Length: 263
Image 1: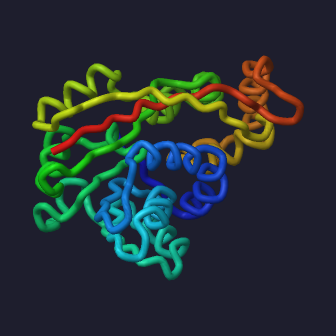
Image 2 (image 1 turned 135 degrees about the horizontal axis):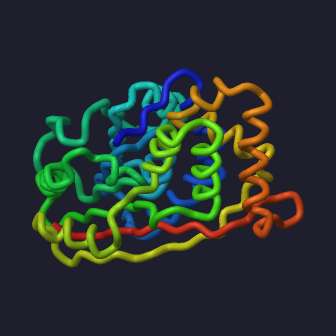
Image 3 (image 1 turned 180 degrees about the vertical axis):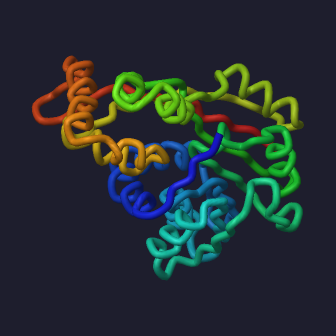
């Protein structure tokens, strides 16, 4: 399972999904990490860098912040958005960075863990990279939200079950107990999982669904539909989420599990 964006995907992702979704989850994750000034932090699967930039604001000028991602277009956007911030960007697989051992006080990852093809190997790499007593904190979706359930069902009906499964896989994550065991089994101590829930506030489906799908790996499949088929897909989502309409906004609950451990 991968999350790869190209073309205008990273730009749309940053302009649409970050302010409406991922920026808020980044703030929640960084708060859980309890970062101190001067700490050395690695943000894994950093994407366009929303968490990475926030981390830099927390650790200050004397802190070291690196952002790692395998997706070159996403990293290019991250570099552009970071401007003059002192952040080092690393294009690499999670297990193949070649970074020196005991380089970081904290390793973070927002919605990256479930994409790692070899989770035990990735966790072992995190142990190698952390100093003794170093901290790991990452967030993963706690299943589907009402919106993503409705969206995937509509994609199955109007595009194909195969494309819907590709979209659905973005939320196919280990349970809280499973991920706690996975992290503990690789040698982390004090492993804890905390569920966080937010009320997500986005534009109504006719505006939001096309923007959202344009920022996803399945963008090409949606954009290839005839206009009538696109409209039918959006209308199905709209009808399914009628109970979550508040004025001119769609407001619904969503949740993540934040996993923390110590070397």
